[in-house]
Each structure stands twice: as C-alpha cells, then as structure tokens.
Image (cartoon, rainbow, N blue to C red; front, side):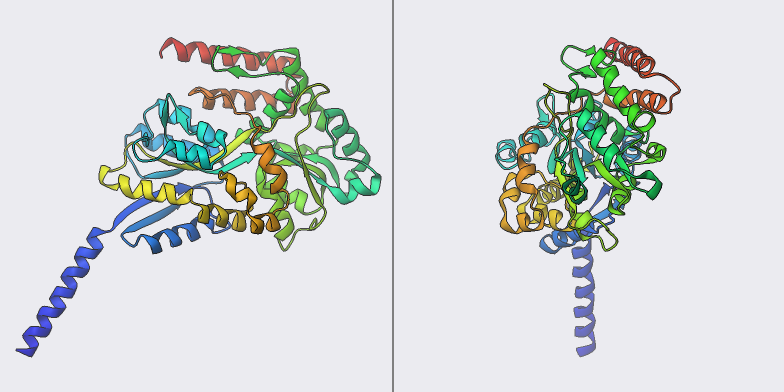
Length: 424
C-alpha cells in the first residue's frame, strides 16, 4: 500500500510539473550584442517577477542595418522567429507600413507613455495614428571633448563649424597619435545620423515627408557635405580610417586618448569614465553639436524600444506586452543607465539624485532631449538612408565632389520617392 501511495505521489508530482512547464509562455527577443549584460539582467529580473514567462534573448550583429534586415527578412515570410525586437525609432514607419509590427493601442496607455517619457520617443513609436513600440531608450548626437586640453589652451567648447575646425587643428598632433575630430564615418546609418546634424545645422534638409520634396542638392546641403570632406582632406583633423568607424571604433579611439573631439551618442560618457582601459577619466566634457552662425544646433533623435512582431502567436501577446512595458519601468530604465550609461526615455530618471551622481551631465542632457530632430519619418527611409550613405562615402573618398555627390543623391532620392508614391 505504501509503495502504491509513493508511486501515486511521484506520478502526481511529475504530472503537475509537466502542467507547470507546459503553462510557461516562451517568447523571443532580438537585440544587438549584449556586451554589458543589461538585457540578460533585465530578463532575469522579469522572469523572477513572472515565473510563467521565459524570454529567450537572441543577440544579433552590432550593425543596426543588419539587425533590421534580419527582422525584415523574417517578416517578409510572415514568420515570427523574433516575437519582440529592440527597434530603432526610424524602423517604425517602414516596418509598420508593411504590416510587420503589431499595433499595441489596446494594450498600452498612450497618454501615460506621453506623461512619463520624452515626447519624441513616443511620437517616434507612432505611425498613422497607431502605436507600435514601447519606448525605453532615447538618444541624441553629442560632441565630446578633452576638457583638459581645451582648458590648458584657454579654449571654450566650439559652437560653430569654424570653431570646431580651428580648435581641432590647434590641439591635435597626428604625429603623436592625437587627432582633432573623429566620428562615425562608415557607410551605414550612423554616418547619416551625424551628417543630418550638420545638414540641419547649416540650414539644409534632405527629404520632407509632408511635401515629399527632396532638398539635398541645395547650396546649404552641398556645403555640409564639403565640411564633412574637409575634416579629412582639407583640415586633416580626421584620420582616413574614419571611413571604417562605427560607434564603438570611434569611442575606443577617443577613450584611448587619440582624439580631441568625438561625435557620438550619450552612452559614451559613462564608459569613458568607468572602463578600466580608458585614458580619459576625469578629462571629458560634453556639448551640443556645432552649427553655422545664425543657425540652431540639432541633435539627431535616436532611440530604441520594444516592438512586437505582427506574426507573433496570439496566445503570446499578453506576455510580450508585459515584457515590453516592464522594460519601460522606472526600475529597469534606471538599471539601464547604471549598467550602460545610455540616456533613457523616461523624464523622471533625469531627476534621480543617484543617476545624477553617476552621470552629472544628465542634468543638461534632459534639455537637449527635449529639442531633438527626427530623421524623415517615412517608410522610404531605409532606401533614402542607403542613398545618402552611398554618396557621402563617394564624396569622402573623393570619387565625387560634394556638389556631384549631392546632386546624384538628390536624383536617386527623387526617383525613389516617385517610384514609391506611384504604387502607394
């Protein structure tokens, strides 16, 4: 009798264990490389609070373009190997327009998102009146500088293109490995983000999604391209290797003490002060982008959040929504600042005394983040972005003059716009 009772107890345990395991919902989450282990930690905390949900992290390549292509390729086949995706703000128009993202209006309180987050991070999550993403991270292009070198030379941070070029020339010493100015110069989205800041700051524009006009062949735009080319070939403040630099290559060069000025995103500041190999601890200042006299400096609005595939199994939607909103919570966004140093989407984080102790410049960053500018919000952006980076590279490698490059860019962009709207 005892043996039979023990057998029944064991059988019941196995049965209930099986039911428990079967009741768990498993979802996949596509991100970039988790080099600072933030995603893993966030998932660990989420699963502790939600033991019935398993989040499987899929780490894609560092290139945002490559990750976007991974998600698009899967979506074209109407499959969902990635239930959730860490989505760039500029991905929303093309992905939503193609029907590849799940509208989440009925699952989230949009008014609450606006109340808690920077407006641009929520605006950038909306397409055609529907919200497709929960914002988590904001972003804005900044200029980092060696404040020790500027102070020693009696210089103030540059405000104009001319001041940047002159200060970089005076302070650099390429023969000893110290360059004046570095940025993201590879042929990819990062180059476009940087160039747009100079384009806007010089009074130009690329494409207006409302009027559908292309303005990249204007004198202001051609001059902005000339400035970019001149950093390498006229002023010689930028090494030719910049043509291979993305965010991390430029950050590492700055942190190793080989550059006076750096254009990059806010995540760099904390790493420059905490990385064990950084040679610029206590020597870094941060300022806004430069612009032409009489113009306004602009930072390209970046930012990331959690979007859900339109092809997710419907039974998994509640779990996916729960995880997406968890990532927007105060606790997780504060953890993100602590672990990665990036600027997050929630306003209240920028008033947290502990956060300001970690990142003193967040006090100024919150003002910058209220005055950023979007890349053109259009489903055409992936095509327009490729066109821009292609011809900028042609100009930077002197295969074309800036005027030739911008006119070719404008022609290709107008053809793309005409072709798209002929069928939509």
